[in-house]
Image (tube, rainbow, N blue to C red; front, top):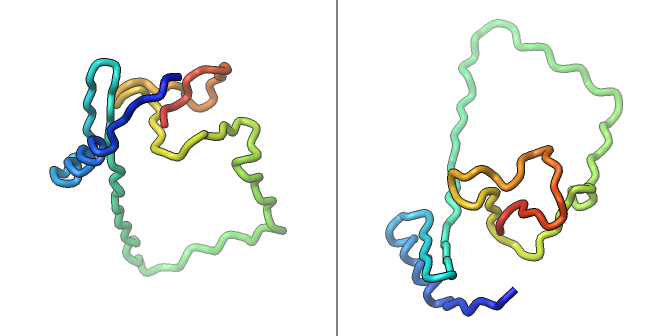
Length: 116
C-alpha cells in the first residue's frame, strides 16, 4: 500500500470550516485522492417518567436464585477482529449504500467488513 502525502494543515482547515458553518461532514476529492472530514454529533434525549396513576404499584419481580454468570469480554469472542487503529467506523461505502456485511452473514478472509 502506497503512503499518502496528506497535508494536515489542509485537513485542519476543513475541520475549522465544519466548526464555523455548522456542517457535520465535508468531502473533497482530487484525482485518486479523497479526503472526508466529519464530526460526531451527540444527540441528547430527554425521557420523562409517566405520571402516577393512583392504584397499586406493580409487584416487584421475583429475585433470581443466584447471580447469573458474567459474559466473557468481547476481546475473547471468537468473531472478534482487532482494529489496527482508532477511529470512526463506517459500515457502508457511503451514506445510503447497503452495508458491507449484515449481522449473521458468513464472511471470507480479505472481505471488506467496514471502513475506519
